[in-house]
Each structure stands twice: as structure tokens, then as C-alpha cells.
Image (spheres, one colour):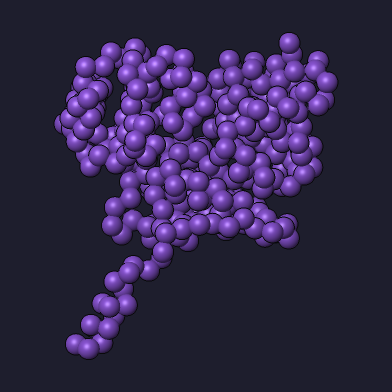
Length: 318
């Protein structure tokens, strides 16, 4: 049934059920009645919730036709379009704020094709255009016929064993995977490599990650792999020593244009996914400050190392 035909209370309940935790954090920061343009809105879960829970005037732009159809089935105002070319069709002043938040590859493509972004925030866009992705990263999800990880944390660092940097026992952190594991008696794992060496061909990645898993968890070597899905992306931002100074900050020269992603310069130390989430919080807080609304706390590891005071004392003594 099309959601638009459902009673309002049931539509709102369905919208809430579709929300991921990270989207809920964003939704909590949106002022009721705001005008929102969700560029790359996917299945429309965030727009759907904001419409029903906060009464926003929401629009969406999505490249994939199947996702556009899904959004329309939920009664959302979403059109198919390419952010690199179709944003110009929206009139000036149509929205209160813009948060540019793709990965570094997508953000550069949008910026490089938008003279208006370079006009209103020339320094931020110049810094963005100078950024580049790092080495490819890989994620291999496995569905296996054995239970695993019951005595371990949900996320385990493995120190680069045969490409393998970390393992997530996905059935312990995600509801759908937990339900599959309970029904099948197996488990769902994600194997991560954060920087695939140039010497490793993409066709070798899956088998090499699995060899790393067997080395770390030999009790799983004889499991039966029921399904697997590999993603190889090149969208992490290169972040070597000295590169922070050339990253654009969250707040650009234009007071209503903010940036978010693992490629922006943050006020706290963070990298990768943690940096992306933190930048989103900082961008939201910049908007909340302008609206006179209470900001959300941003948590961080200590900004000063435990040995910093000892080093300072030693330097003064010398």
C-alpha cells in the first residue's frame, strides 16, 4: 500500500521505524517547520521522518530511479537528478542552509561543477578542490554457518593481518543481521581494509581478507560461507602529516554554507567515519547557533596527550 493512503498516525510510525541511528541524530537537530533539501536522499528515510515528525517542507534529489520510486511510494516530494548539474534548477533563497556532505570525491565533483559555490566561498572551495582520496578501502561482508564473536566486542582491531585491519561481528550490532543469525544459527561478519596497497589487485582482495580472518580466528576456518559481498571504494580522504592545514573548515566564508565529511578540518581529533559524524554535528551546531537553539555536545578523546605535561617540564628543565 502507498504510504500516502495510510492514516497519519500509521504513516508517522512507519517513518520512525525506517530511521537509522545516525539519521536520528541529524533529525533531532532540524528545527520544526524548516525547509530541507536532501541531496542524495536514498530511500527517503530522513525526509519521511522529518515530514511526519517535524512538519518540514522537504524536497529530495536522488540519482537512482529505483530509490526515487521508493520515495514517491512513501508520498515524498523527490525527483531524479544529478547533484552536479541539477541543483541550479532550484531558485535562489529556496532553502535556509546548505550542508555539503558527500565523500571527498563527490564533494569535489559538486564544487568543481558549481561556479556559485566558488563565488560565495572561494577559499573553502579552493581547499576542497586541492584534496584527494587516499588508497582504496575494502569491506567484505560474510554470511557464515557458524556462530562467532560471542565472547568478543562487536568490533575488533586486527592490526593488518593479510590486509585485514578490523572485523565487525555484524549480527551483534545490527537488528536484521541479528535476526538472520538467530534463525540460521550462523553469523554475519564484516572484514575491513582501510588502505589496500597498490600491489594488490581487486580480484585478490576477498580471498586475502578471508585468509586474514582464518589466521585471526582459526576456529572459523572450516565454516561454510553462505554468502559474501565485497565493496571496494576510493573515497577516504588522504590525511598525512601536515595536510590538516589545507583542509577547509566546517564553516565556510558564507554564513549559510557548511561542510561535513571526513575531509574537513575539525576542532577535535577524529578520522574516517568518526570524523564524518563529528563534522555533521559541528555543521548542525553552526546552524543551531545562528538559530539561537541549544547546541548538541561533541564528544572527543582528550585533546592533550597524557605525557604532554611531562615533556613540557623536561624541556623547561633543559
